[in-house]
Image 1 (tube, rainbow, N blue to C red):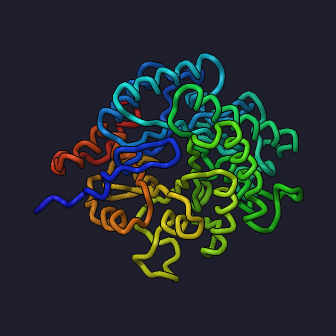
Image 2 (image 1 turned 90 degrees about the vertical axis):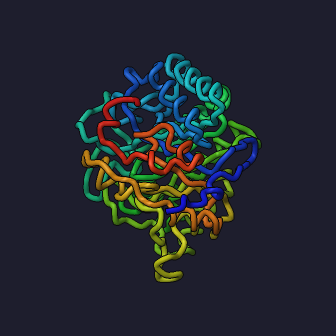
Amino acid sequence: MPSPDTSSLFRPFSIRSLDLKNRIVMAPMTRLFSPEGVPGPASADYYRRRAEGRAGLILSEGTVIDRPASRNDSGIPFFHGDAALQGWKTVIDAVHSAGGRMGPQIWHTGATRYINGWEPDAPVESPSGLDAPGDARGVAMTGEDIADTVAAFAKAAADAKRLGFDTVEIHGAHGYLIDQFFWSRTNLRTDRYGGPTIKERSRFAAEIVTAVREAVGPKFPIIMRVSQWKQQDFSVRLAETPAEMETWLLPLVEAGVDVLHVSQRRFWEPEFPEIDGENGLNGAGWAKKVTGAATIAVGSVGLDNDVTASAFVGKGSTTASLDRLIDRMERDEFDLIAVGRALLSDSNWVGKIKDGEFSGLKGFDPTSLSELV
């Protein structure tokens, strides 16, 4: 069979000060290989290999801001403190030496539990002291806690720029802290950070973005990851209609987000099929339509099953056609595509696509999770 025309994936893309040689992004993936919160030489080599493999943009694993109990596993790296920041300086220098572009993903895991049961030293914090609906954990954040958290996000973003990173991604998805504010069933607050509408519950995120924009200046691009689904409940939908999606996401764009990274488990699934059918716009497509912002799509690219059916349960995936991706990229439904598990097992996945070496593509091997290959 003839090789597919992948030229739509290899068009350059620019936004603010960020210039990319192609549209393929390495998705952020938790790795847990940072003892004491400090990324080491193995982490630098891991990201450098993806830059050598020609990923257009690399987004790091989640890195935590300077707040007590901001991570839910001891192997998650910090993005604060001299030792951790020096480690990240080594990482970005290695990526740049290979011609790559990279941004750290900065986050706070809120009240979420990790699968191994690890517990932080301090009480976890969240909007209303809940991990999931009806599942009490930790403490509800005070106004002072919220202000300090906003400032910690801004400080991490400023440090990313100072260290030489090319962009920064704020994690507002998957049931972690920011997303717990979005979700009506974990945000029961009656102050200005709560409320019956998604627009009201977006205030915390918008304040973070405003502070980050002030910290990094007008030229540094800001990405924000959002999702309908939560790890606490895969079926959750924050926005039931495009109009509701607009009230959720447009305030974030107006506050300073340049790129919305819309997480789906399967990129080809339509977000609102009742409006545009079974081949309709996906989440990133609708986010672009209702806000005008650039968007990144993600979800099972090049693989035959989604992350919840493989990596979350220790199973592998085999390769799958890129035809549906190419069709959507050619229509400019979204601007960039993030690739996760395929790049986890094969650092040269992008290069093989570029060179037409489709027979050499690998599926996802769950043993990749146990080491930095």
